[in-house]
Length: 295
Image (tube, rainbow, N blue to C red):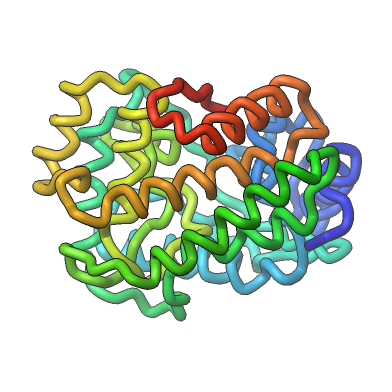
């Protein structure tokens, strides 16, 4: 990974990439800092995504290819700025440019997500090189790169990862294997111009469709999603992943990946550090009912 993913460095990267693309970076707003840094430009209706390092270049190229495939397949999704030759590399950070979406109300809900997932899963095979899905591939690198995290927490998360690698390899899935979104939650949807569109193709892969159903079940368990909204999701998709015998394993995998994703920014915000400690404590104690707080 790139050595520095701090806001100061990222702002300089964003400005340089925009100048190369012929765009004005003045007044750009940081929308999100996670696996990517995401900025929205003010003069131009463009969103700028900065990946964490040069090794992520194939991922960014895949995202651009998947966006093109979904557009050709008629699946409402985010669109890349095709007039810009991209991605652009700045100091080892791959940068991509996307058409900004002005969101409408109401915000998309679980049933909207289920409908889009059905369309995504039915779209066939894309003309892109998709990796085979490995839900835990980012966990060890995140742990190795962790800063401001207690050694006992890192040791616990590493041991949990090793255990789940073995348990995941033994799963037998109920749904067909094929292209999956990989991070399918309502936060990766927007409603615009009367339709719901799908965002964020960073972890699109070939894998078990059950994985795309997990975020909504986790929202029911950890984030207070009402049962009736979860039922609407299951009815719209046609499958309740909680009834599958491998559910608890995939649930544990998903919670681990969510926790280590949050861990990456514990030094940026004390609220994130507090939530990370809260999640680790609940995992260590085996408390499946404690509420988590979204970031």
